[in-house]
Length: 146
Image (cartoon, rainbow, N blue to C red; front, side, top):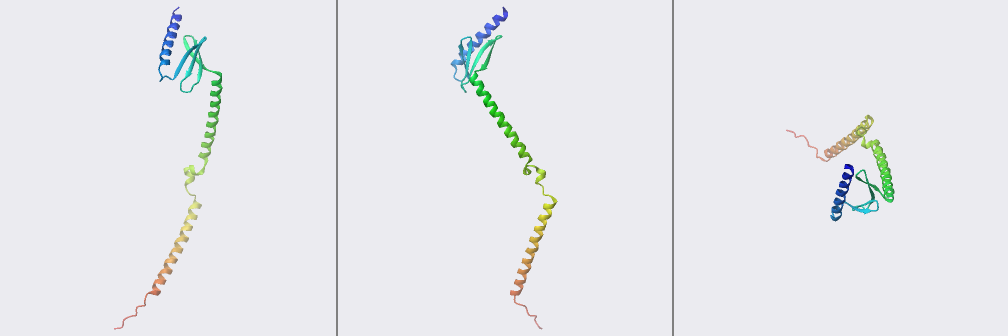
């Protein structure tokens, strides 16, 4: 007897709160009595759920069309997560993202030093040639005789 009274009290409380929620525009869900249960509408998405009272509690289940749409979206999102995980895995193996791979090898260092050495040798040759040209253009000083 006490459980029946508790269930009736819970149902009345739920119904009164549903009425108050239906009148308020900032509530997310609207419940309407339908046959042997309730229909719950999500005011943000328009999704409908069928609600039944079980053991003094209101239990809502998605409608068949909404359930299929939900499962389709879930499958799409799972595929997308799989693709993103694959992409991240590929990016982690790329050389430029591996800090150790960014360091030059000994061969790269030697090659760079060879280029630098050739550059400086040629540069010094140019400076020497320029210096010789300047010395040619300068008048030769004749030693003074005393």
